[in-house]
Image 1 (cartoon, rainbow, N blue to C red):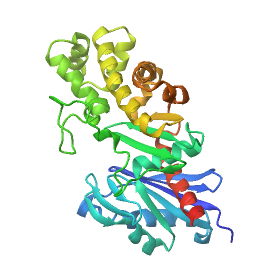
Image 2: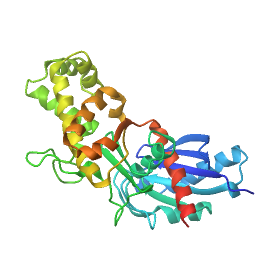
Image 3: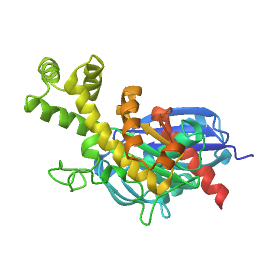
Image 4: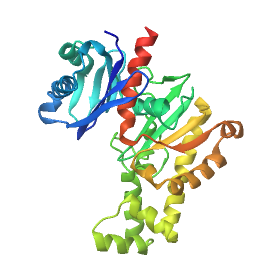
Length: 323
């Protein structure tokens, strides 16, 4: 039987996304299961494999057609061993994900950080268009990063490469970050960080339009901020300008080290589209080395929630082809 199928798995704190994908990138099936974080997530690997096994049986696909399973997991990963050193949202610490899944399935398993996997997916079947050097940035609850250099993910010595959300961008008076430090990019450019700053502006009396929205709905979202800015609200526009300026500076500093052909912006904040990209590109242009800027295109991610499963599938292809 020809091995012609890949399994991509994207583990999140709420759901696990699974997909069966052909070696050429055709999506055969995709579905989600709940992430059971009880008992420090001990049942998650078994839940994943049971779900995949059931779907293979339902589709009458033999296990012998599967090349391997590629898994994106949150937190700090040791790619060589497939051990999840820390995944706070699930409760894993030194969790031997690769070994457990391989024992359950009898299929080769490859594991990497979820942001790295999403970067691989976007480069394979999304906005990256298979460039050799790319930076992927996810602006969601936090700020995730994935760096592709010479067509391979940069993981670093112990799996902490491309943790760009934890670059220090505010050196004095920065907001506390979940990593235990202050002033990280995540505290500024994530959806959480943007809303935090909006609330600070409201409390200081500097954003009456946002204050009215908060009074009417009880809270503020990033969509509220971008919507209000689109209507011409000056404080909302100034807030977006401030955020994109700091993000543009951070990306310019990263770009000078990897010289990417593309910077792909994903995550919930990226839904603002050109309203985010236009000031971000201006900031990047202002701070980046001109020769780097000439070669770099900043684009919005295309795959959305499918980036992780495509990336997991592509990780299998890379690992198998390199062995």
